[in-house]
Image (cartoon, rainbow, N blue to C red; front, top):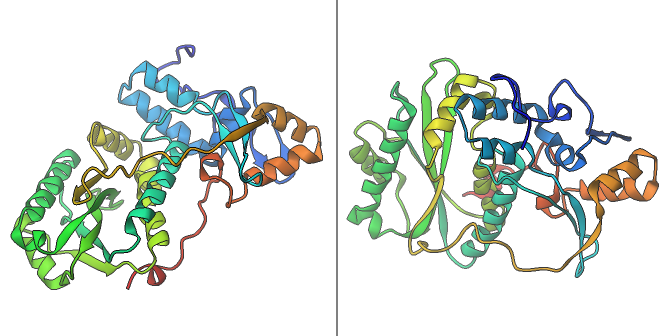
Amino acid sequence: MPVESPPFCTSLVPEETKAQTTGALTGDHFAMPPDAGVGFRHSGWRYDRELVDLALRRIAAPTARLDRFAHCGRNAWVLRCRSDPDRLRVASTKCHDRWCRPCQRERATRIAANLRSKLLGSVHRFVTLSLRSSDAELPAQLDRLHSCLRCLRRTAWWATRVDGGAAFLELTRNGVTRQWHPHVHLIVEGRYLPQGELSRRWLAVTGDSPIVDIRLVRNDAAVARYVAKYLCKTVPAAVIHDPDSLDTAMIALKGRRTIATFGRWRGFDLDAPPPDEIWDCVAPLDAILADARAGDPAARALLAQLRRPDQCPASLNVSTPPPEPPAQLLFA
């Protein structure tokens, strides 16, 4: 267990704070922290990770959760795929916390792969349903959004046009008005949905919110990644950097599902693990980092390969995901 910290001190090890550069892999410089796996896994969001850790402490998260979050990435080993030696990944201890960006990115990758397989062979539409901004507390807005969506799905009009799909929650907050803006993105399978009619139906169940958007899915694989990215970001950067907003979001989302399937998709596990593959151990990550720091060209080449965007996403330590294609290539 970590040593107890003062009330407003981070539990993260010193090399993880924004004032430190130990553990960063920048250019030709490889600095090895005492726990190299943690530094490598989280170097892409070091400062935001400290902000999340402080917020977890402010909302009195259990000590066990803080410990898992602080040590996510320990016991790291580099693995090589036996069937495809060009593929590498890093296996390590993981916290699986909703607010841990690498863990959520790995989950988003799994969901994108499963969603991509589900989208094949059928016509799908990307639907966004929003509530009018208000001064209501965030938990009340989330409850209302869920209730309105349930009412819409129970209408005969929806049932005759939508066979099934998946819903993804997104949260934003206006920096000027301080109003929260929860909305839901849906991938739906079924028949044509007139936007004007959906707007009228949505207004009828919400009482004040006619804003909807419907687009025909044109690129299954790209849309799967586009939708899954909402899972890995949880909330926008502006919320992460605002302590009051971050605390509010953490408390409001506690115990809530941010993804759900419905209709004929009910029971389909979007979070199912990928098919089993055989991975061979290469070396402990801290040993590779130490060799790279000493100038070993083979270790440096291995680390460069690990950081390539085409490697297994579960192994990546990249602050900015690969860019998505323009929206006009995803939707009609």
